[in-house]
Length: 101
Image 1 (cartoon, helix red, strand yellow):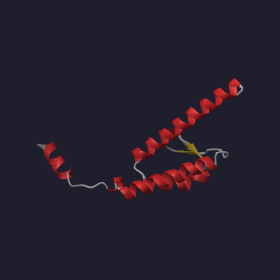
Image 2 (cartoon, one colour):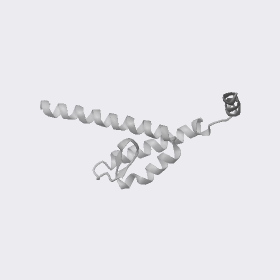
Image 3 (cartoon, rainbow, N blue to C red):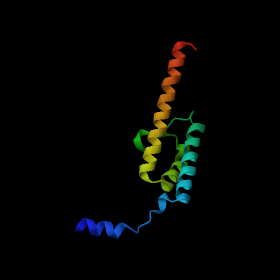
Image 4 (cartoon, rainbow, N blue to C red):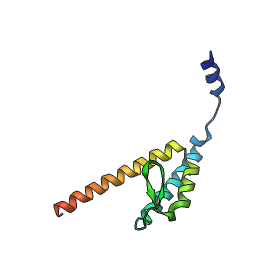
């Protein structure tokens, strides 16, 4: 009975953060943040994001926009994906350096 009341109350609720304009704003903010990370890669990372992602202070404003425009679960997902890609690239670069290619 309680479950039916919960479900019936939530049926018409629209989550505006998953609509097209909100998703596009999220992707734009995400891309701006990761672009900042790439551009500032020579700076020492001092700020901590989700899932252990470190970033320089110069990217703090774009990180705030990113977190503001995206769901928390999306931020974590994108951060994990970015860290995984960077880790894989670093491993591949190390293998080529060791081979002397």
